[in-house]
Image (cartoon, rainbow, N blue to C red; front, side):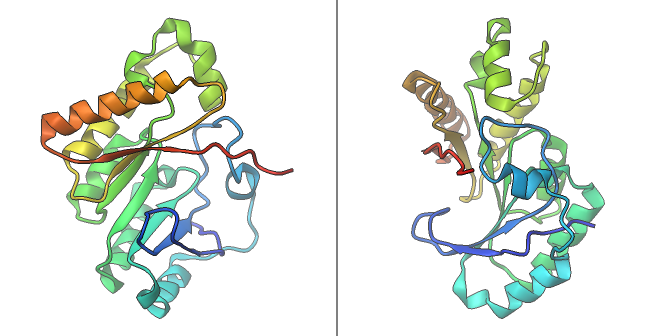
Length: 220
């Protein structure tokens, strides 16, 4: 069973000009990104009080006139069991036709593809924390600083790059590639990401946007 944060958020800031319902899941995360916002509350926490999918469905039905999109985040929502993901997203589909968008770090491409195959997701907002396509063995310290994972193998980034490409290739008008403006990264890193996304857009005839979000230090 997937547990959901009880504070469901109605937001105008996630998708400019479109009121959206932001749903957080207590699904953990396989990364520990630099000063991750709400890390203790949404990832480290062992909640004794939470919403089950029935509670989320009730809210969607009750407040359906207040939002245009459903956004699902974590942690990393796609770390949940595939059967649970399919069950919960199917229940959402049964009560609303509004677009469902999942926020993901791109490390679960197989699940992205399966949910897409079943028609349960309309788009993915994929995090591109670094210019993954340009990383080399000289960047292991930067990877650890940014993503909070120690590695001596770059193969994990092949999967993330494939997830970014998949999100663009299959875009139905709802996907997005996003970065965070970490204070230790130069503007050239974001420009490299932007060029990479644009090249994929050209390749697949898409118009997926690339956005760089401000970095926010979480208050203690």
